[in-house]
Length: 437
Image (cartoon, rainbow, N blue to C red):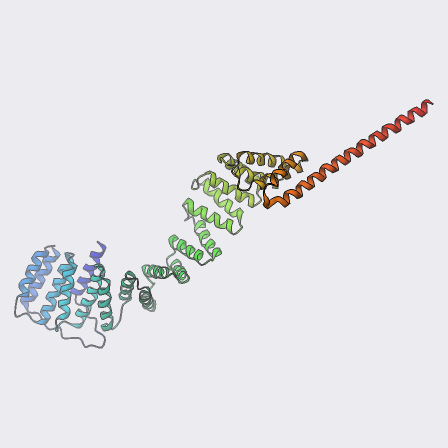
């Protein structure tokens, strides 16, 4: 319906016979229409407005066969034909009628120009983009003051034919004319410009165009597109800033978008902010409390050294998981918090559940926990298991050596203590014997 309305506006405009002068050409004499011809034209118009297109065409057919009608009258008659055909959505015959208008020598220059313009528009609607371009270029050659909308139509036609450079030239001309006239550049024009640059793979200018769109027409969708372009250009902080502004404005409603923002903060090593975003998303009921999302929240709190918040969240995630990965992560958080017994217990559960990508790290942490608890024999068992992983063999051996030294030190202390106690005992017995003597 929008296309139909557009065409009707155009043909009505033609019918009103505007007087735009041709560039470098004198206005041709409009001549005159005799009373009978004028009467039939008005009758055709009345029938058309009443929706009686067939009857209106019949009136014009009678007029067409009239031999005495002059050239100017014929031009007006064919203009009526075009008006009627366009009204009944017969755009092909409307184009033919406009061509008749152009072909008549007595046709006023302004009317011929407008006929060319309308033919270009009708061909665009019929997706005959080459013909649209040809007629629009003819119009531009003859018109004194090109309009921005003409250049936009050319740009759109070139875009459909993937002539991106020519399309951009015409968009820029339209923008320049609009700006010169002191008018705000149309939103759709800038959207077309952004699409053209994007299809060319020119992300830098795509971003610049979206920056202009955001400034003139601040919409969430344009901010998202701008953020995407910053991502393509490797401008991660700008991308993060744009997404954060969307979030702070309360325009981020989808779980995926909110989680994406949180991941961006994690990528920029701002885990506390990431955790707060995920936590609020869960509280608002936007982000599901799934095992993966809970795990991400727990990891974010852990990276932010918020152990009191990380532990209960990771415990929840670990219970939801069938693998030992989360217990291994939980063991690390317990260890960092100084709770070595819980760290050892969590590491044991991780080993029991299995599915660890690097079980050696888990055994190493288990051994370190037992070592700090002075449970050295359990620690040695864990270190022996850790040594099976080559990547941490050196660390496992170092901790094993340290633990053995601790054991040796304890044994030496115990031996020294035993010897001291024996020596003291012997001394006391000797003193008692001397007293008896």
